[in-house]
Amino acid sequence: MSRTRPRLIVSQHLLAAANARIARDYDTPPAPDHKLTEDELVAQAREFRPDAVVVTSSTPVSAAAIAALPDSVRVIATVSVGTDHLDIPAILGRGIALTNTPDVLTDCNADLAMMLILAASRRAKEYLALVAAGWGRTLGLDEMLGSRVTGKTLGIIGMGRIGRAVARRARGFEMKILYSNRSRLAPEQEEGATYFADPREMLPHCDVLSLHMPGSKDGRPVMTAELFGLLPRGAIFVNAARGSLVDEDALIAALKDGRIAGAGLDVCRNEPHPDPRLLALPNLFMTPHVGSATVETRTDMCMLALDNVDAVLAGRPALTPVAG
Image (cartoon, rainbow, N blue to C red; front, side, top):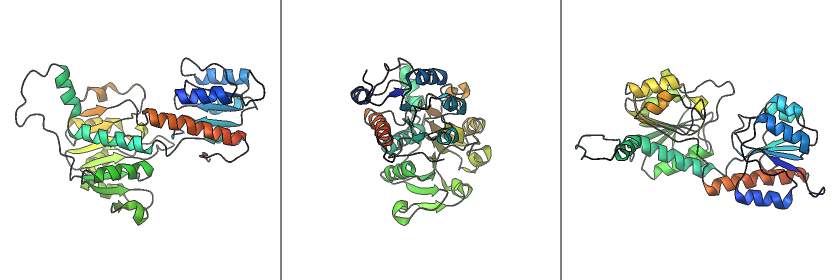
């Protein structure tokens, strides 16, 4: 291996285009055949002494791991928007640049949120189970009826880029948009949506509620039994943001007693091992944290991570830095 190129390690195999770019531009050990554990990542870094480390949300990087990294590491680039798996103060405290990959996954996450809204509203899990069992009979006129999405009222908690992208898609279904956010958006960003400073005042008006906000640092849920109780009976609940936002005991109770008619989740509190009670519910449609799981978006995420590495190692500002 050449000693003139920068050195880089990755915590797991990336997409083909990114792997080809790494092989062309960096000295790197063979791509791992599994997702590296934190200990494996540190051991490889101490042996290889890289200039840059690329990780994904599958590999945590704690303060202890940061302390054990060699002084050669100048940048850690995570192929994710979320940074829950990283000890940010420890990274920045060592003078290591930290970057993530926002924006490039906005559209795919919004697409998935709309899929969850439709699947939960139209009882997709139950229909799929019936077909998988062989179908075998004609449904009654009043049997297994879902809820129409068109013309309903959608409430969004967290009106950032993804929340606004969901709102744009929902308008195609003639949905009325309500939102609650830390601050009110400019009129051109609201696009006619109605703002509520307190989500409690918004929830009673929501036929569908969708979460699009970061998880709290202390892991405290936003959606509690109290807030589920404020939704109209028969509402639909969707979470494609963070599992930590939801009190799952309260969600399960609301689904069982009909407070909410259905839910669509892409995330849960204990990933990748969801509470079995969630999986047993016929009115909960769930996907395995795949909001960004398209070839286009995952490639863009990998490439943005490498763009950040290139910038930092060249002495330029990172494109998408993570601040403390």
